[in-house]
Image (cartoon, rainbow, N blue to C red; front, side):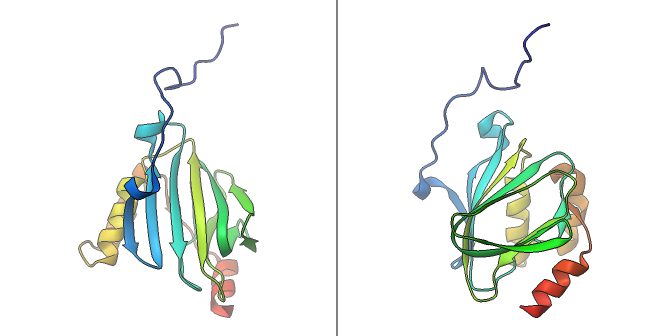
Length: 169
Protein backbone atom coordinates (compact mmCIF):
# COMPACT_ATOMS: atom_id res chain seq x y z
CA UNK A 1 0.00 0.00 0.00
CA UNK A 2 1.42 3.36 -0.93
CA UNK A 3 1.60 6.40 1.32
CA UNK A 4 -1.25 8.91 0.82
CA UNK A 5 -0.19 12.10 -0.89
CA UNK A 6 -1.31 15.26 0.90
CA UNK A 7 -2.09 17.77 -1.84
CA UNK A 8 0.12 20.79 -1.63
CA UNK A 9 2.18 19.59 1.34
CA UNK A 10 5.43 19.10 -0.57
CA UNK A 11 4.92 22.38 -2.43
CA UNK A 12 3.94 24.40 0.66
CA UNK A 13 6.23 26.45 2.80
CA UNK A 14 5.72 27.91 6.25
CA UNK A 15 3.50 30.97 6.19
CA UNK A 16 3.94 34.00 8.42
CA UNK A 17 1.32 36.73 8.27
CA UNK A 18 2.21 39.78 10.30
CA UNK A 19 -0.77 41.39 11.99
CA UNK A 20 -0.11 44.76 10.41
CA UNK A 21 0.10 43.18 6.93
CA UNK A 22 -3.31 41.45 6.99
CA UNK A 23 -6.09 42.91 4.86
CA UNK A 24 -8.73 44.28 7.23
CA UNK A 25 -12.39 44.63 6.24
CA UNK A 26 -14.98 46.67 8.13
CA UNK A 27 -14.60 49.44 10.65
CA UNK A 28 -13.82 49.12 14.35
CA UNK A 29 -15.11 47.57 16.45
CA UNK A 30 -16.52 45.23 13.76
CA UNK A 31 -13.61 44.04 11.64
CA UNK A 32 -12.26 40.98 9.91
CA UNK A 33 -8.55 40.47 9.32
CA UNK A 34 -7.94 38.12 6.38
CA UNK A 35 -4.94 36.06 7.46
CA UNK A 36 -4.41 33.14 5.06
CA UNK A 37 -6.63 31.69 2.35
CA UNK A 38 -6.27 28.29 0.67
CA UNK A 39 -4.18 29.75 -2.11
CA UNK A 40 -1.51 30.50 0.51
CA UNK A 41 -1.86 27.25 2.50
CA UNK A 42 -1.88 24.65 -0.26
CA UNK A 43 -5.58 24.01 0.35
CA UNK A 44 -5.21 23.01 3.98
CA UNK A 45 -7.04 25.86 5.67
CA UNK A 46 -8.45 29.33 5.48
CA UNK A 47 -8.14 31.58 8.53
CA UNK A 48 -9.34 34.97 9.64
CA UNK A 49 -9.69 37.01 12.82
CA UNK A 50 -13.04 38.61 13.50
CA UNK A 51 -13.79 41.28 16.09
CA UNK A 52 -17.37 42.14 16.97
CA UNK A 53 -18.68 44.97 19.11
CA UNK A 54 -21.03 44.33 22.02
CA UNK A 55 -23.91 42.09 20.91
CA UNK A 56 -23.03 42.46 17.22
CA UNK A 57 -24.13 39.73 14.79
CA UNK A 58 -21.48 37.80 12.89
CA UNK A 59 -22.67 35.11 10.47
CA UNK A 60 -26.29 34.05 9.90
CA UNK A 61 -27.16 30.34 10.29
CA UNK A 62 -25.46 28.26 7.60
CA UNK A 63 -23.47 25.08 7.06
CA UNK A 64 -20.56 23.94 4.93
CA UNK A 65 -20.61 20.65 3.04
CA UNK A 66 -16.85 20.11 2.87
CA UNK A 67 -15.24 22.05 5.72
CA UNK A 68 -15.16 22.05 9.49
CA UNK A 69 -15.00 25.47 11.12
CA UNK A 70 -13.09 26.19 14.31
CA UNK A 71 -13.74 29.19 16.57
CA UNK A 72 -11.14 30.16 19.16
CA UNK A 73 -12.24 33.04 21.38
CA UNK A 74 -9.30 35.35 22.05
CA UNK A 75 -11.26 37.92 24.08
CA UNK A 76 -14.83 38.50 25.19
CA UNK A 77 -17.73 36.09 24.73
CA UNK A 78 -19.19 34.59 21.56
CA UNK A 79 -22.66 33.13 21.13
CA UNK A 80 -22.54 30.23 18.68
CA UNK A 81 -25.28 28.13 17.15
CA UNK A 82 -23.96 24.56 16.97
CA UNK A 83 -26.59 22.36 15.32
CA UNK A 84 -29.74 23.08 17.42
CA UNK A 85 -27.94 24.35 20.54
CA UNK A 86 -26.78 27.89 21.27
CA UNK A 87 -23.67 27.99 23.45
CA UNK A 88 -21.60 30.86 24.80
CA UNK A 89 -17.86 30.49 24.36
CA UNK A 90 -15.57 32.55 26.60
CA UNK A 91 -11.99 33.79 26.13
CA UNK A 92 -9.76 30.72 25.82
CA UNK A 93 -12.59 28.46 24.62
CA UNK A 94 -12.46 26.60 21.31
CA UNK A 95 -15.39 25.14 19.38
CA UNK A 96 -15.22 23.01 16.23
CA UNK A 97 -18.30 22.69 14.04
CA UNK A 98 -18.13 19.69 11.69
CA UNK A 99 -19.28 19.75 8.04
CA UNK A 100 -23.06 19.62 7.44
CA UNK A 101 -23.75 21.19 10.86
CA UNK A 102 -25.75 24.40 11.06
CA UNK A 103 -23.92 27.19 12.84
CA UNK A 104 -23.96 30.95 13.31
CA UNK A 105 -22.14 33.35 15.60
CA UNK A 106 -22.45 36.74 17.26
CA UNK A 107 -20.92 38.60 20.16
CA UNK A 108 -22.78 37.87 23.40
CA UNK A 109 -25.39 40.54 24.23
CA UNK A 110 -23.29 42.11 26.99
CA UNK A 111 -19.86 41.59 25.44
CA UNK A 112 -17.72 42.10 22.39
CA UNK A 113 -15.73 39.22 20.91
CA UNK A 114 -12.36 38.71 19.26
CA UNK A 115 -12.25 35.35 17.48
CA UNK A 116 -9.78 33.36 15.41
CA UNK A 117 -11.72 31.36 12.80
CA UNK A 118 -10.17 28.47 10.87
CA UNK A 119 -11.81 26.40 8.13
CA UNK A 120 -10.32 23.09 7.10
CA UNK A 121 -9.97 21.84 4.51
CA UNK A 122 -9.84 25.32 3.19
CA UNK A 123 -12.20 26.96 0.76
CA UNK A 124 -11.35 30.20 -1.03
CA UNK A 125 -13.24 32.46 1.38
CA UNK A 126 -11.60 35.85 1.09
CA UNK A 127 -13.56 36.75 -2.07
CA UNK A 128 -16.74 35.93 -0.13
CA UNK A 129 -15.74 38.20 2.76
CA UNK A 130 -14.88 40.99 0.33
CA UNK A 131 -18.34 40.59 -1.24
CA UNK A 132 -19.94 40.93 2.21
CA UNK A 133 -17.88 44.06 2.81
CA UNK A 134 -19.06 45.54 -0.52
CA UNK A 135 -22.66 44.79 0.48
CA UNK A 136 -22.08 46.47 3.86
CA UNK A 137 -20.81 49.57 2.06
CA UNK A 138 -23.76 49.59 -0.40
CA UNK A 139 -21.58 48.63 -3.38
CA UNK A 140 -23.18 45.24 -4.04
CA UNK A 141 -26.61 43.69 -3.74
CA UNK A 142 -27.35 41.32 -0.81
CA UNK A 143 -28.86 38.89 -3.34
CA UNK A 144 -25.38 38.38 -4.79
CA UNK A 145 -24.54 36.20 -1.77
CA UNK A 146 -27.10 33.57 -2.74
CA UNK A 147 -25.46 33.15 -6.15
CA UNK A 148 -22.18 32.18 -4.44
CA UNK A 149 -23.41 29.28 -2.28
CA UNK A 150 -21.64 26.50 -4.17
CA UNK A 151 -18.50 28.49 -4.92
CA UNK A 152 -17.91 29.31 -1.26
CA UNK A 153 -19.58 26.22 0.27
CA UNK A 154 -21.87 28.46 2.31
CA UNK A 155 -25.44 27.17 2.56
CA UNK A 156 -27.92 29.24 4.57
CA UNK A 157 -30.56 27.64 6.81
CA UNK A 158 -33.33 28.80 9.11
CA UNK A 159 -32.85 28.23 12.84
CA UNK A 160 -35.55 28.80 15.45
CA UNK A 161 -32.99 28.21 18.21
CA UNK A 162 -30.74 30.97 16.84
CA UNK A 163 -33.63 33.36 16.27
CA UNK A 164 -34.88 32.84 19.86
CA UNK A 165 -31.40 33.31 21.33
CA UNK A 166 -30.77 36.52 19.42
CA UNK A 167 -34.24 37.95 20.17
CA UNK A 168 -33.65 37.26 23.85
CA UNK A 169 -30.40 39.22 23.56
